[in-house]
Length: 364
Image (cartoon, rainbow, N blue to C red; front, side):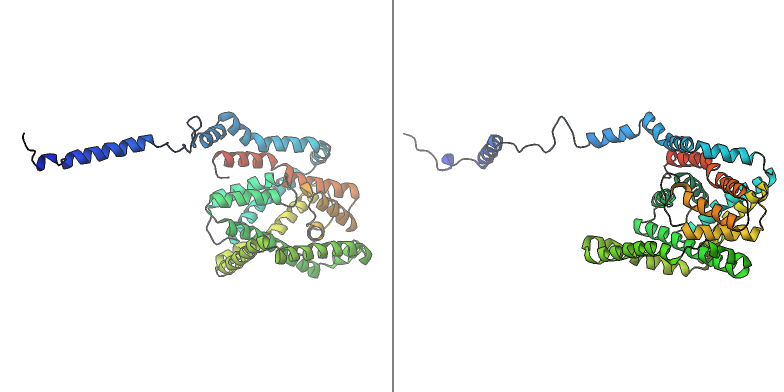
């Protein structure tokens, strides 16, 4: 009987390792596999890719580019009677004065671009900035109170890499500078022209101003209470105010920005009033130019905050002011219609085309 060696009874290390590996593999294969996070029928990247391909489709892109033109066409159909009356009277007007009015209309875009650049510490490309203001004029008819122009400008600033807080603060500074500069220019004309006495007939009495003052005070009070009480609303408002104050200090530390901001804001109402003067001279309004400028500044300052599409409230107040200065009602109405044709209706088509081109070039 042969005896076994002690070493022969010991299992080799290589065999143990292979057995342990096999047992581990068998144990892993026996465990249930974890559920897949993504279904094989719908990968996680398929839905965004489908949406991107849908937006990049030629019909969708064409519809997005033509949407401003369709908006312009709809607006023209709803105001066809006013457009026809204004065109009929302007057909018999002096063309040279109307051409001068078109030139001053183009200068309003330049003035607006200066104010936009002056309200922002970042440097913007001048050509694209001017094109955005031309497009903003067309978009301004969609929403009252200048919201359309602000929306286009905000989108333009975001595509240029401006942070949201800084872009919003620049729009607020733009609106504030326009209002303050227009009021200062009005005060200068009131001090220099003796025609301000006729404006006293247009100012309503205290009983008519009391409801408006009550409503304005209630809006300011409710807004202040909401900002103070509601914490989710207080934090973004506080951050926006802090960013706006920092940008205001930075802008006013640069003489070039100060000149662009306040010089453009003061030039804008004067250029717009010059368009009204040219139209009045073309139609035979019969008023001195300083009276026409004063009428425009007074009417725009009095009811400029009324949110009406197309500036209808300002137009009604402007006709009323021109009549109070001694103009005939028919000629005053024709002058205001001609002013609206040159400043809004005539730039509508090129503004819509520029807006579509900026959308196509992904500038907006």
